[in-house]
Amino acid sequence: MPETDGIELIRQVSDDPGLSLPRVVLMITAFDRDQLNVQAKGLPIRTILTKPTTPSDIYDAVATALSENGQAGLNVKTTLTNQLEGLRALVVEDNGVNQLVARELLTRMGAVVRIAGLGKTALQILAENPKGFDVVLMDIQMPEMDGYESTRAIRDQLGLTDLPIVAMTANAMEIDRRRTREAGMVGHLSKPIDVEELVAALKGFVSPKKARPASDSGKLSLPSMRPSLPAQVPGIDVAATLERLGGDQELFLSAYALFVSQQEQTIAECREAMKQGRREEAASILHRLRGVAANLGATEVAARTMETEASLAEDRGLEELDRLDTAMQALLESARQLLTTFRLQTPS
Image 1 (cartoon, rainbow, N blue to C red):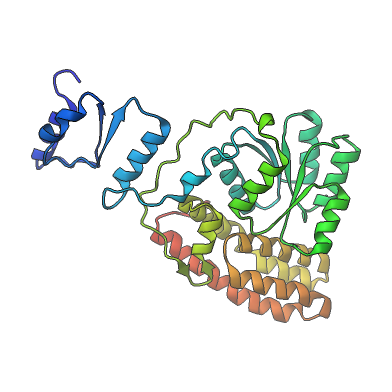
Image 2 (image 1 turned 90 degrees about the horizontal axis):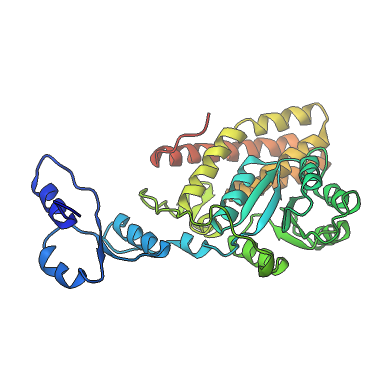
């Protein structure tokens, strides 16, 4: 640079006790590298980036600079990059946490994603743009129009017989898979969604020749400066959940912030439905909670929710709901402590 080059600037800032030097990535040309060892000796340079650069080079350099020891640690998010580049996906899902997880995972793999919160919304979107999507990811249990009805309407009313529709559901028994096939779906993903299974399913149903460049495919997701999350938190299998999310700590924390915000009243709503004899509504509430709890590694709440669902038919739902409530309150407290520790506030 003119007047003061990068090395001289680093030296001046380092020598000034009134200034704090952030972590430095030094950008040089290949010609400069031979002289660097002498000129930069003793300076606090975390890593060196040789120009010309690629997005991958920049990512690796920043990851190294932000790491504690100046060496890039394993960052699982890099394995997601561009695996679904340009794929146009319509995600039909009514739960906000599941919407967030699906959108972020798909987008970070290069897909162009649109969310429909209801089956009838998906029909409107596809009617307006019948050739706008390469695949539909369809939740099964939704209010007003479930995934089976929505799929049949897409096939019969809109005539989109060749559009791949993949079911997403917490029900993984063979009878459930058979029902998805009979409704016209071509694949089945069990919740909790695993990122590798998601990639495998979508790559299998969508030809690479159909993929279109994503408008934001050049974005880089920079490594977080947060400390690593613990492998286990009371009520939450953090390690297993992070593995399913491709190692993305920011997505994990954002999903739990949304979970706390949206699910605090779930048990009370279910209890009221049970007391008023609205068994089908209670079952729907429990099913949605089970799916999102499983997605977030809240294993005890997911198991208790399944037991409470089963108890509805035996008229002992309120008794099981009390046990679920205890597990749910413990989970919410763990989540709040985790979010407080990592300085992420729940949305208002």
